[in-house]
Every structure is written in structure tokens, then in C-alpha cells.
Length: 296
Image (cartoon, rainbow, N blue to C red; front, top):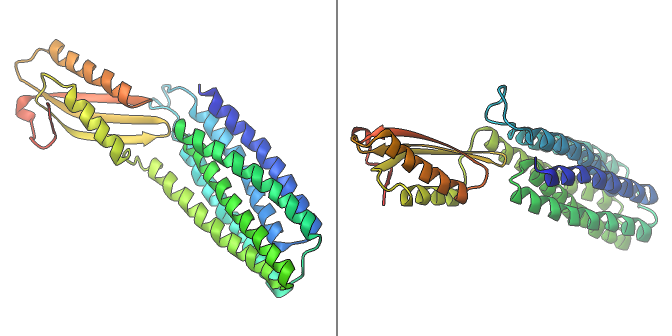
């Protein structure tokens, strides 16, 4: 079990709660619709952090007879949920923004409110970087999605703070609600991006072109004695990569010799790709398609 990933995910819940409390305080001090919208988004942050912790914990479970390929895709379900919750938050914020546009009011206590909101933003920024960096390193789509959402939250809050400074300088109360509406649009875009990336994982999307090239080169340079490899397929499920292909060998080659080639290829693939499951189907030379990887 990757305990570091689980602990980071658990810490996200604590960070989200602290940031939520801080933003609620900033809203209560100022009465700003824009800061209220920012606080609403933080409620979603708490919910998504809990969802990510649950998914990451499930994804760490080893494969069993019920799910022989493992529980890795649990993280994609969490990431989709994050995206949906983000969009729900955007709808709530848009509603508050519309109410504010109809009844504009200047926020109060500008310096204190903006200072409190700024502190929450710094904490969110630091933690978002931690989540994105570790999520990519550990191939955890749930943590990376959570981190990207927090980074969007940071951008939104910075925009809100800058806009509120303008509100105080100009006295245009309606700008407060306009800022909230812009926050909602930004959140919708973020939510859609998270959902799009997660659906790719649920649909068994192939690994990146760079990784596919590395896989093909590894097979080609370590298949001495074989003729070709074709029908190479890859898919990513959380941190686990799945590779399967057909390996064509001379018809007179013994089973033992073909097995040695497969073992050699598998060993090198495990060095090139972390957390990988490999399936090789050996075929005689008359099955060659002359369209795959020619062994070098």
C-alpha cells in the first residue's frame, strides 16, 4: 500500500476544512458576494477531499477474485465526482451572483477581509502544488484532480481579491457580484476539464505517445530470436499500466526458448514502466502480419 498517498489525501481533508473556515470568516467580515462564492467553492473542496481519500484508500487494495485486475479505477470515479461537484458549486455561486446584481451592496471591512482571504489562498496554493506533484509521481488521478481544482480555486480567489480592491476604489458595488459570476464560469471550466480527463481513464485510454514509443523500443531491442511483435495495446488504470501484444517466433522454436524471450521482454518492460501488468501471446511465423515491430 502507498501509505504516503493515503496520508496526503487525508491531510487534504484537514487543509480543506481550515481553508473553508478561513473563507467563511472573510465573508462574514465583509459581506461580499464574491467572497461568499469563494467560500461556497471551499465547501465543495471539503467534499472532494473526502471523496479522494475514500477512492485512494480503495485503489490501494490488492487485486482479488472479485476484481482480478485491481481497484485502481476507483480513483477515476472519484475524479468524475469531483468534476460534478465543482459544476454544482458553480451553479450555486451563479445564483448568489444574480441576487447580488439585482441588489448590489458594497462590502465592509476591506483590509481585514482581503487579508484573511489572502491567507487562505496562500495555503491553498502550497497544498495544490503538493497534490499535483505527488499525484503525478504516484500516478493518482484522484489526487491530481483535487490539486488542479485547488489551483483553480487559487486563481479564482486571486481574481476576487483583485476585483474587490477595484470595488473599494471605485465604489461600484455591482462589480462584487460580477466577480462572483466570473468565478462561477471559471469553476465550470475546471469541472469540465476534470470530468473529461477522468472519463478517458474509465474508457481505457492508451498511455501517452511518449510512453508508447518507449514500450515499443523496449520490446524491439529485447526480443532477440523472435520475428516481430504486433497488435500492441496499452491502457492506463490509475497507477497501473496494462500492456498486451502478440510475439511471432520461428515455427521450429521450442516452447522453452520462446518463454525465455518473453521473460526477457517482461523484465525490461518492468524496468521501463512502473506498476505494469504484461500479457504476451506467442504465435508461429505464419501468423506474422509484417505491420508491427520488427525485432532488431
